[in-house]
Image 1 (cartoon, one colour):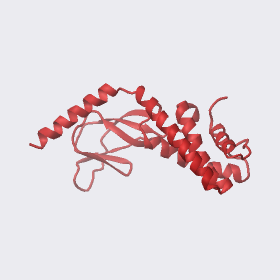
Image 2 (tube, rainbow, N blue to C red):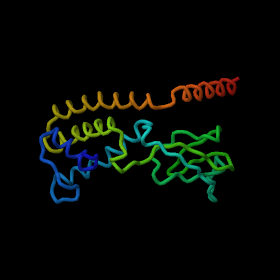
Image 3 (cartoon, rainbow, N blue to C red):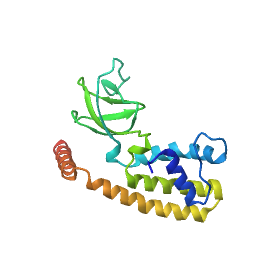
Image 4 (cartoon, rainbow, N blue to C red):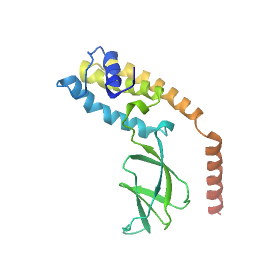
Amino acid sequence: MAVSEVSICNNALARVSVERVASLTEPGEKAKKCNDFYAHARDALLKAHNWNFAKGRASLAVLSSTPDFEYTNEFQLPNDCLHVRTLFNYTGRWEVEGRKILCNTDESLQIKYTQKITAASRFDALFVEAFELKLAAMFAIAFKSSVSLKDRYDKEFTAAIDQAISMNAIEDDVQGREADQAAEESTWQTAGR
């Protein structure tokens, strides 16, 4: 079965012994609660870790507007950006403010970021498992008013998310990340002299 918003919600509903929904647009309390919780939980989980499946890249042009003080330029973040991970071609100070990156360069910025992935078919399988458990914990209160059931699924979620994060790390360039960290530490040590 293909992974979809409905399948993720139905698997979470099944865990707390609640009947399935045919669609998230159907009338009724089940679909309404699925809609209430799904996007919030999805975005929180996507932002909580640098998932490889949610990695995006973009080149950002300098905006004509400028910050009031502290920085000389600003750059508009992509619409689907949940979290800026890295700036590739700029090593100075920068920060995210609202939906913009502020920094002191006149060049375009190349960024790596976490995308807001809305197509469930793009999710990693272990992410889906953790996501379903997160929703099940939320549904345990919403449908069953059961703190013990919520606690059970919170514990299962913690184990599942840890496994998903570990497997995600295996597919990442750990050596490259360690080299970047060493270079950054060297820069900070030199700057601190």
